[in-house]
Length: 108
Image 1 (cartoon, rainbow, N blue to C red):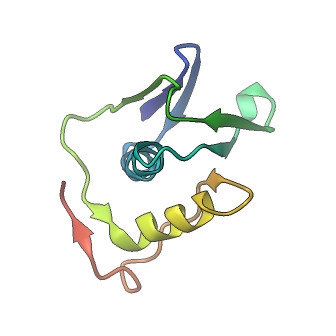
Image 2: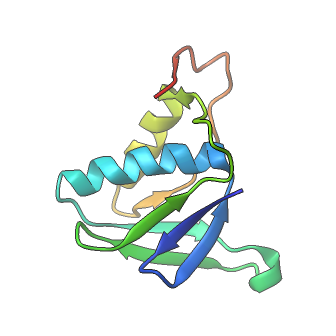
């Protein structure tokens, strides 16, 4: 499990594979100067609710990965995440497309 750390205080666990995809989508939007909400479902141990943060180019983010190697990236998942990130509701995790529907994987 990797960690997404927002503003040095909010720390959330995500699977390394999901975190790698989120990092690419978030970094791309912030590099373009775009601000947006990022929302996720909280772990049942802290109430089973949801959290939403406002991401903007000047916010402090850390992506801390558990494993040293980078997982291959599924381009179909990146496109799906980018699509919701560009919607009025902002970024949230959508299910990863299956291998049959995702022909391209890249190792960055």
